[in-house]
Image (tube, rainbow, N blue to C red; front, side, top):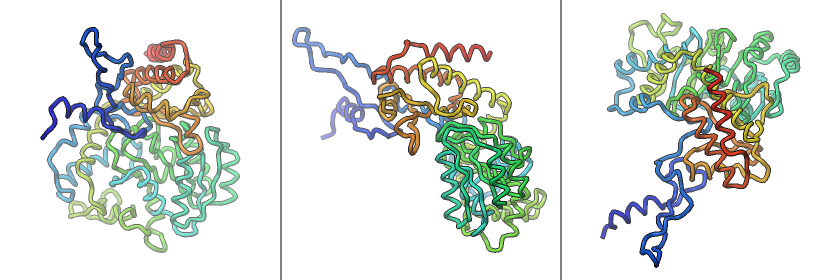
Length: 448
């Protein structure tokens, strides 16, 4: 016998969820037992403010909230990835428009995957076994690039940087001159520590020793100014789900002419067939743009492209360009500044050196005696906003908040500060009520 409608609703609302689950409906307390004197149900005094929402607001450092037109783009019938209507009508215009976002005149290759896919595709396409590579390791994702280089048998050397500290450019320059690497890699915006590093200066160091410059822009592209051609970035590697404000599932790599030449001079083909970037130049890029395919001739994608994700990226890029890069970068800067001022008013310190704080990821120190995971759970389950803990060795001491795409705005920053204050108060940390929101409001107002 099927349960009554009210019973089914209770079953849905009261299901258990894992503490780290992203998609959830917070558990309900329902109503208490009837008061014997009045015969009326007793309403619990503790209100679950997340109960009326179907999911938490994503204030994590990616994936981030999606603009509604991007969501609508995925609500379409399926199309065939190799049909010309998709290949020439959706995929190609998207990659050409991405050039403006990347600030490059060169090819931007898009493929299924994530930021890590882009990093690995870039690395394995230009690096051969025993090639010397200098890896700047300033956080968890610098370490990731080191591991990728290890997997492809590169002769890598790590240039370690204390997490959250400034990059010593003079020392890096000396190390690059000593090693004379084939490639130098840097994470532009280190998501694990909330820091932004001087990519333009590192690019000069790479160029001075004749090295390729590989730049991870996973949490910076479309949120922080990234000048691919002006800086001399040879491989600009990123993913779709952060400041681009597109769905998770696409890897993007902007490729310089120097990088193409290195791929073409390889002694052996790259070890991956699907993620060898040279296949795109040989099979898909037309001769008029430096590729191998005669203009107007049939061509093929080296990997099957996800049509719905490509359509969503097309809309996301259009929204970025309609807003304008200068405005978008300024918006992220103001939103991050407002968030930091709000945190300071609550007595919360930032983790990194103040001179290199990121405008897309804020990494903050948790007050003493407070567990970061408890803050995340309380904000998510009671107030309906999801932020992230730190990563690796910082997991138990820091929290991370994203201001990316849509969420770099007062509509998201102010409720996040409010929920953080309430959650900390629930857990025993007290600050002046409303101080964080007031300070952030003032920052937004000052920006005009």
